[in-house]
Length: 470
Image 1: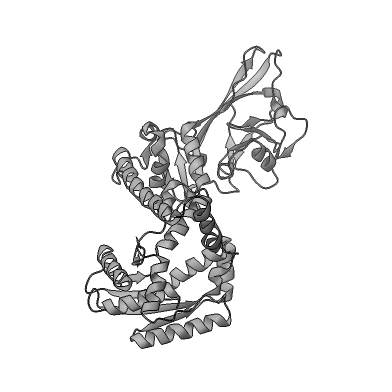
Image 2: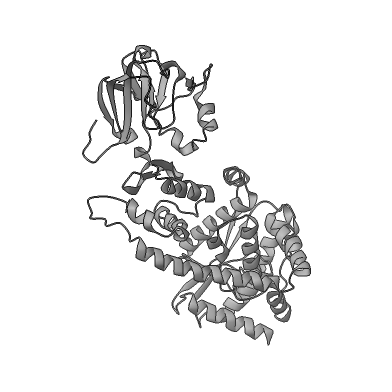
């Protein structure tokens, strides 16, 4: 009876996931209980719910001889069922490179595995890739993301359908799968890496969940699944609300991006989802939490600037708009410099800024301007001034300090975000001294003395208006 229940669950899942009668499926099979059970079920449904089935098996090259035994078992299973099999094997160097990039062996193997499956699906000419994740995998994923402190949207866990990848066993527990294998006379392989506690998922499976079940709630798995379902429902509501409040930009409009005033009027509780909507046009994965926090802080503090994104692009925040820009518009070329006539004005599109300088008498009594305006001692300035981005080895003697320090250390101490440092214009005198970093600090070498009247320069930086040209 249990076997028939799983069979009916998978049959209903295929229909709900969009599998049609004339579709061909590719099954990812490791030889373990989950994929062996799904192979047996799909074999029985082949010709009824869909018209063709191909299997794909990948040797990850991390289990040595045991992997060869797994491949042999998979071949025997597929041969017994009359199912074509596509095999692949990862190169050790390929695994090492991906592991170094992602800093995770689990993550590297996952990326490489799905890459192989998509190639195999293209080779076989199939529409769907079926993988054998079950409801226990889902509960473990939700707990993993809770433990990592990820945002609540991630608690929705593993999607039942993700592009062409489908997961027909998501409504079935691991216990039910093992029972199915026993009743069907299947002899799946046992993967010893599933008990290797170096892997975070295995620690959750064998240590965290049993402990939580014993100490807090014996139905912890079901509670985690309900949490995942709730996250899915809430995300759907959030998306509908944000789509209503923040429409997609008009591609035929004069201005690109999103209106900042509209964004600032959106309730705070929806802003994180709003940022996700804006970024999803540029990112192919869920952005890190610190990126979201940085953007939200800039919006709340009404700051302007750029925040770098993966792939070389950036999110540009001006006084009026938020706009995704390509990599070639993100930062000035390292060797570029601009001569700033003093007194005079210069517009620098690469910094999205306009700089003005005027002679100004300082009476010794009025307070100094701060931020994007500064007042500096005229007789200490060696003209002409130049403007450029930071370079390796730059130093500055900040206001109030007796010695110079590296610009890198200074910006770190001032907590200037890494992604903004290359976007800061530096103002240097004719001797190559950094005398002003607009919005950040002036140099001790050009400071005025309170109570001492003398000639000065008033320097200002403003965001470029539409129509400004260099």
